Image (tube, rainbow, N blue to C red; front, side):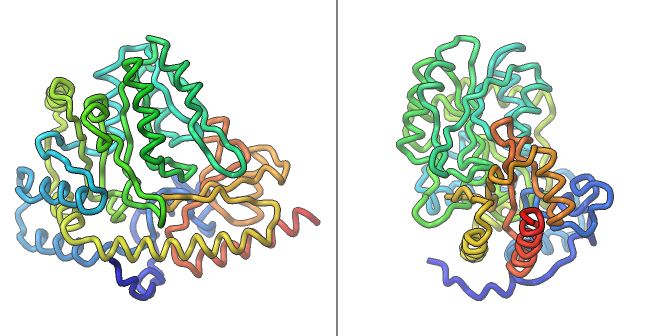
Length: 397
């Protein structure tokens, strides 16, 4: 178990504007957004684990950066990680490399559906799902989550109906779910998997947030449920979120079905998606091999931030938090303010000084919501909540 050492290392202020970090770049903040509370882009404001930095420094010191093969220890490190953290017995032979998770989703849609086919998504859901499908000429088929008493669940009846349509050949699963923070239980995943298998709907599961869950809500890899589920699944994995290395890592495609894996391998070759980045390799191997303590400490710190947010929101009475079971992203409900979606964005930006992700980006079900990233210094979050409290008070007045 983690020792939960002091949060001092995560309280360190590091100016992310010293590099072209997307979170603090005008691409994300817009013109005139320099002084906003940058809490939109889904990465952490925390310095990465020492074991990762040391591994990258050692590789840098070697001084030669020619073409490289995959290090012998990388896939074993990934497999060991999944087993000890999530009790998932991965077969290294089922794993392919990929530049990133979105690449995996795009190739899966391109390979296993045809132009005009439907791909089921469960909004409000990660906005890039929509972009990938639209840019590849696939139909986005919404199976909206059900929100009741501050808790989201899957609409299984709706999923059954949609899956029965032979034009709908694939489902994009977000496990854990971004932005609502649900960590789907094994029971829920089995029910979803049974419906999809019954109707020949392939499950493509984005599990990039799998390592980031809170106490009492263990992550269940969809493909770990059993051979039948794994045979009808393509899983996208990456340590990008877990270890805050999105700019210097890649991803892994897990495919148990031999025919589908071969098709994916051939497509990777056709698209030349088969080059290795030396820094990504050493960063990922170090993280998986020896990053447990750092991640446990991060989860402890983020839990503290969540506790702060929960406590502060009680006093606001007009803003409600959808209690997250995982991820460092929090789905906030601003419907009581009675603002239009654009009005809410303007209020948060101009009055509260917040640059968060607009809820409507995740589908129409996200209107009047916003996604807040709490993987930041606690003092920074507390100050931002002060600003929101003042803005709410002024709005009410």
